[in-house]
Image (cartoon, rainbow, N blue to C red):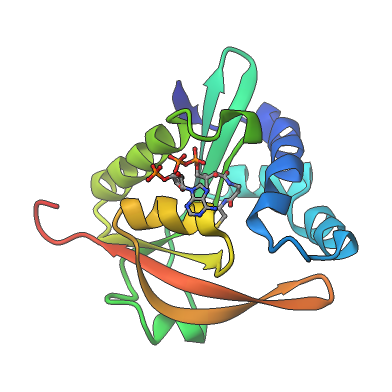
Length: 178
Ligand SMILES: CC(C)(COP(=O)(O)OP(=O)(O)OC[C@H]1O[C@@H](n2cnc3c(N)ncnc32)[C@H](O)[C@@H]1OP(=O)(O)O)[C@@H](O)C(=O)NCCC(=O)NCCS
C-alpha cells in the first residue's frame, strides 16, 4: 500500500536509502563520498525533519511492516538558479526531492505506484508539475522518469562528498487534463 509516512518510518527510510543510493551513483563513485552524503543528508533525523515539515509530503510504499520505497515531495518554490531559469513555471512546480525503491523490489511495479500517487498529490493540491534532478549516468532512473514523461530541461552540478557529479534537471509539466 501507499500511505503518508509516519515518524516511525524514519529509521527504515534511512536503511532503505543506504542500500538504494549507491545504485543512483556512477559505478566509480568513491564509497567515502557516498557515506558522507548518507550520513549528512539521509539520516533518520533528516527524514523526521522532512516528515514534520508542512511544505513537504513524504509517501511510503509498504507491505505490512516492510518499507519497499518512498518519495519526498517539496511543495515550495525553488530558489536554485540553475532550476528556476529552466522551469516552465517556477511558482507551482513541485520538487520531487527523493525517490527510492528497495533494490529487491526494482522492476516489481512499486515505483509505478509511488509515482502515480505523486502525480495525484500534485493534482489534488493544485500544482502544475514536478521537477527533479538525477545523475546523468543513472540509466535506470533516467529511463523510468522518461517513461513518466519527465523531459530533460537542463543540467546542474550535484555535490557528493568531495566530488562534483553531473545531473540532468527533468520536468513533468501538466497541461490541462493531462
Ligand atoms: C529509479 C527507481 C525508483 C525505478 O524503479 P524500478 O522499479 O527500478 O523501475 P522500472 O523497472 O519500472 O523501470 C526502470 C526502467 O529502466 C530500464 N533499465 C534498467 N536498467 C537499465 C539500464 N542500464 N539502461 C537503460 N535502461 C535500464 C528497465 O528495463 C525499465 O524500463 P522498461 O520498463 O522500459 O523495461 C529504482 O530503480 C531505484 O530506486 N533506483 C535506485 C535509486 C535511484 O536511482 N533513485 C532515483 C534517484 S534520482
